[in-house]
Length: 125
Image (tube, rainbow, N blue to C red; front, top):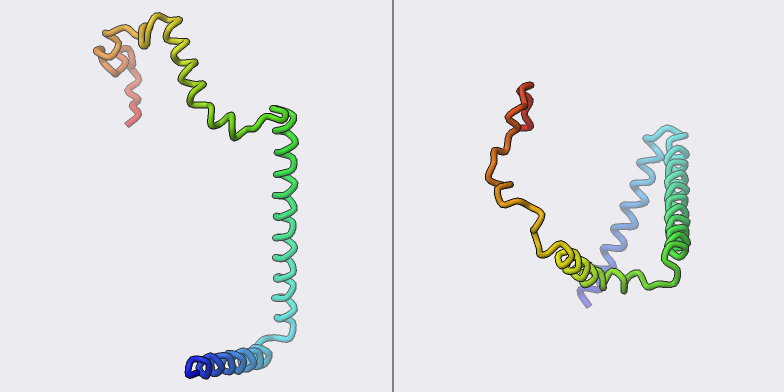
């Protein structure tokens, strides 16, 4: 019961503060200031609506383009299968070349990392 009383007191205090705050604002602000604030609020609402409409149109167009590109294929299922397909392609490529890393000479990493013919003195560090 005590909590209910304090909740009631809090509601009453909130209402009184809001009413007194409005009176103070009306007393000290110039007459047209509240109209400007309301106009800004309406503009903000219109901007939020335009952003929501743009996002909805963008999502709809994305769905259209995706349907035209891949048809009725489940894109999430394709993404789930991607690692297996990549591994299969990598194994096929390695088998075709004769094993992994066959094209890279062993002495490739042993040489200098700077260009000996670079005379302009420009460095990336």
